[in-house]
Length: 381
Image (cartoon, rainbow, N blue to C red; front, side):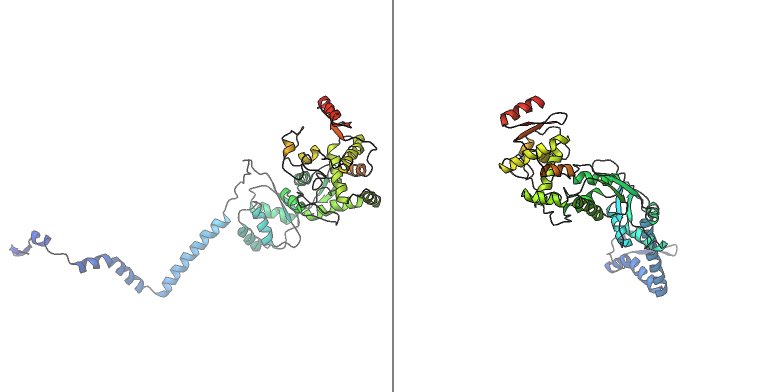
């Protein structure tokens, strides 16, 4: 590097400066200098100051989390078919804790955050104050509206009418309409509900309670549990089935379960009173001859919605309930029969008919032979 004096001052030769070798040690120190400075800065801070800053950070995180929980909006839920679900039924029973209530409300989609619900309940002193009963909630209700409903808990008395021939699914739908029970919860309970020893369903049945929920008009309080409703209806059946009926069934070599299964077929195949005993006789005779019952009622039971006429294709459905493909009785009742249908099985008509077909008005026409039956089918269907 050349240095010259110019006017008494030193002048550095730039070309010589550019060609000078790089000092790697100095370059590394320059890269690390910000971190060294940061280290020195923290070394100068007192532990008390560091703790205060950390506490402030954690407090901010807590506040943000609380805001996210407590300001969480209730979204509108949609059903699988795209329609807004208008109501949800929730049953609160005696002894349930706030945590259990919150979990149920969350599972049903009524509230979006069970922890928020529990915290609010504890802060406001609501724990232990929530009333038992069946509540109907609209999807997207606020927590305030939900609390208001279950803290007031006003009971109401509902009139439940079950017509003869209603299935378990139809009863579940009616209970839902009356805000007495959730449909799916009722179906789940009816699946294995067996209140009496004579309810001995085949393993292939859909609902153990089918056939034993007696058709009647019931007065039901809104806080009745599903089990209490099922028990009430099966108790009514047991009361209506007299000792004389039980003895007559035994004389006919019919168990109570078989009696009710046959009565359910009569109930579904008959529209007019005068046909009950005759249809019962046809079914009993077919069983005696080991002929398939071939009743449309068993096929209709397998369908999501009733059809005016079953088809040849329907008779090929692979199911133990298909009495076109399987001899003997179906695995269990296909409906809940009334007392008249049960009495018709116990007191069948004195005829030898083997076939029947209903016309468009529901009147049955009977035949002794298959050829006669086909003529009636062509005439009335």
